[in-house]
Every structure is written in C-alpha cells, then in structure tokens.
Image (cartoon, rainbow, N blue to C red):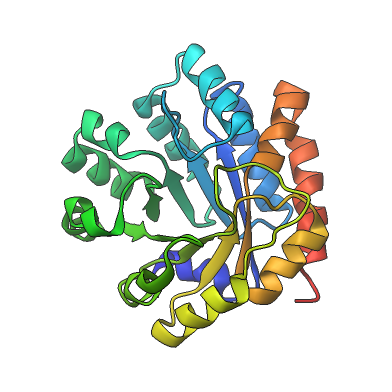
Length: 258
C-alpha cells in the first residue's frame, strides 16, 4: 500500500485542500495543522499557478493572492519540510503541468521525495499524456493521481485499471466551487471504478456541507473539499486556522455514519 492508502485505512477519508501562500505560508501551515488535528485524513496542497484552468473564482482568487505575495515553488517546498517535522498525514500537491515543467521535472519530483510528498494531482494532464510524468514519478516514489470526470464515459475503466494512490472523481462538469446540489450519476461511475481497481476513490468539486460530504462518502471512499475551506481562509485571513479546524471537525463528524 502506498502512503496515500493509509488515508483510507480507517474508514471514509476526509481530504482537505488549501492553496499554499494564501494569505501567507505561515497561515497555510497553521491551517494544515488545524485540519489534521481535527480529523483530515489527507491534505491537498495547491501550488499556485497563473492560469488555473480547473479552478473556479474562489481558488483562482487564492492563487492570485498567493502569487502576488511572492509565493514560489521553492518556498512551498520549505514549508512542507517544516510541516513534516510534526505532521505525518499523507500530503499531495495539486498543481498544473507547466509548474513542474518550468521547475524541471526531475528536480521537482526528487524534492517531493525528499520532503515527503506522497502524490501529485495534475488536472490539466490528459490520461493519454500521463507517460510524460509517470516514469519519473515512479523513480521518486510519488503517486501520479488520476482524475475521472462525468465526461470520461468509456475511458473510466481504462483510467481505473492504471490508477495509483487514489482516484479523484470529479462530481460535476465545470470548475471547482461550492454547489447547492450535485446531480451527476456518481454511483454508476464508482461502480465502474470498483469493477476495475482496488484503489480507493474519493469525490471532489462542489462539496461544502456535512450532508454533501456524507452523501459522497456513502457512494465512494471519501470526500474532497477545497473551495469551502479556501472561502474560510479568505474570510478570516491570518486568523483562519481555528475556523478551518472547526469546519473540518464538523465535516468529519458528518461522515461518521458512512
């Protein structure tokens, strides 16, 4: 089992996303610790990018604030080094292929191994082009996490068979953001995944309430929440960590019956 598998070992996983450096890296570290202390099973760390095509306005705004404040990939690596002194929870980066290309793929993934990053999610990397990164990920022991979307259709089984870490199931068409209702037939998507892999799958995009988290975790192996957490950080700024912790605790409690 990869380190990421540990997030799903004790029941349904709650996966929390934060944008690194919004409003600053010290706040990001405090929010990560707050999330972990209150039950987050896996942390997604967003590396800011100037053109985050999968993101809605909330996370786009967080990316812009972080970049304007001077956040760099190297500074984020240093932040993870600090977190790893006391945080053992699995952590993955969510970013875009250009971020890795511009940094240098070999260098990027070698540092990921050094600092204890367990996987990467690249929403702009099509399944057919994943070979671009797959070998180097394997060289450095980093899981390349695949996404399955409602539009994946007859490609779901193929993607599932080669999945590693966990499968990120995109709940809705469009970009990230909270939604009042999720209408996609996720049950059918998860059934195809189950038929083709034992790798866990978690549902993200649009989840913001304990009821939604419980429903998604009931269908899959976990729930991923990003925009709702980023909204809390935007609202409370440098005082956000306890509010993020309280939110994660509420969401995790909502999933307890799954």
